[in-house]
Length: 254
Length: 190
Image (cartoon, rainbow over all chains, first blue to last red; front, side):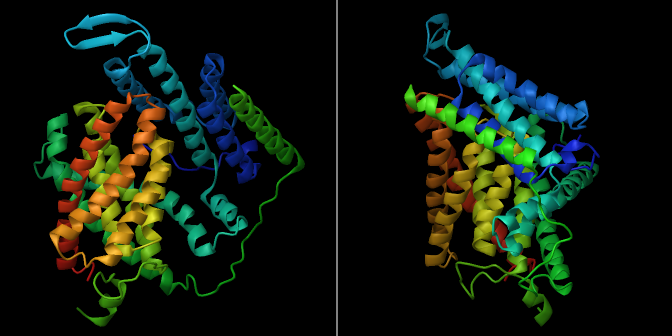
């Protein structure tokens, strides 16, 4: 299973949205998660993100891998809080280890916050074409040489993931055991080194190919289409900014 | 090595510049950023299995790539690699404190650059010193994440960050030097 699903055209309403609206949505969710501490809000946000994703045409299986990763993070958070949290009262004691009642709500809140941020960031990258991200940066006056790197990253991610999988398969075929955690730990270097070397070679080849095609020859760059923010999108962005300001103001007042 | 190959391979010792915006450096930063992210996915998961509060393998992998890319491709490649890695880490839920990788990667790459710009980076001691600075800067940023997001007690945060930093300094200094030397021998960098 791929750990990262890239953008795919779905032909739904979300494809017509300006990337600035999608970025505002991501920022809105992230700030609400980091500043909010209300249980109802924190539990509601991941559900809203999943609902928006489904409405935008994302299949439910796209959420499977992130949810699996989030479960791992959740377990990690719970272990850390059980070991180190000193909030609330002692509910269990075994030798030097004492478990406090405050560990569970702390782990749950942390888990909900991280879930919302991860799902919103994943949704943003899955619903925004790499070309739009480049245009977004160009619109923000970032030089094209740097702006195009975002698109390049999105294109190379699945490619390098396949390359890593092929190196792991090759090493496994040569008899390198990679079953449990200890074997995977031992196989880290024999897998990483050829992967790094291949990547250097690929970087050199790609850069050479780009320069031979005239990349960076001209300072001015034209695009097939321009970004346009509709009236409804402008109003939505304004409302999101207002809601975030209100939330931050409330936090400062407290 | 023939002239055409010399032109496409980065030079470590000559032209010791701080800022490089040629296509090789930019593309190299992006590709190695993705590579670093993929290897961190494996190492951080292994860390989670071994002992969840510490990020030893992930820390070594992060510091090694920060050093390697900054040393070979200079800036802004180091920052681009770091930020590429940090943003994908947030989107894939690599770590609970992934959002703090954004300032950590930016500042530590700049710190490594400053040291690498002043020293020749030919000796082991130079690599250890560069990694010392990088790991201290990076782990201070991540320590904020441990304290504010995971709500760890201050003493646990300091001990956890210190262990990660020490492992990073030793592991990454060795790996960076070994990798740079092997890349030189393979003719991929001069």
